[in-house]
Image 1 (tube, rainbow, N blue to C red):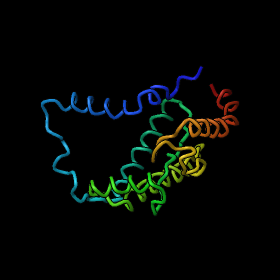
Image 2 (cartoon, rainbow, N blue to C red):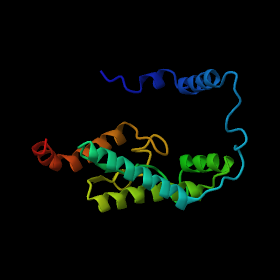
Image 3 (cartoon, rainbow, N blue to C red):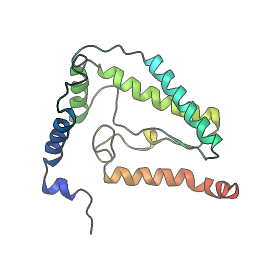
Image 4 (cartoon, rainbow, N blue to C red):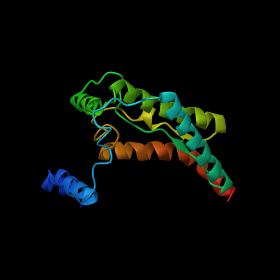
Length: 175
């Protein structure tokens, strides 16, 4: 019997109600910490953000290697496209615009971070599971802009298995 997703089928608005309850509980007695930033234009320095991301990625790789772990990098699948094409993409673009973040910046950020992951994998000669390239940017595989649905989760698992399976004998020999 398959249980995944049944609560949302039985109670389609449950996640909205729970989200509001959790927000009220968490924010009780406090102001919205982002109230001064909402709706205002943001300082978007993609080079600085990408540089910080790359530094964090390098630190992660260094720590993992020093611990004797096998490192595998993976890009993030997403439905970001330069020009929003479907209703979900347009709603997402409108949401970011209301927050003062132009859609071009959101798209450029995802593209830059995924490209940083690819270049870092090449530089360190690490296995790469390029989900951004392998998972179709459609509702067939994606629940929203960044989260996989059931079919997408299966496709992601298959992509990871396909990339890692040839490496397992080598990794096992070095343990």
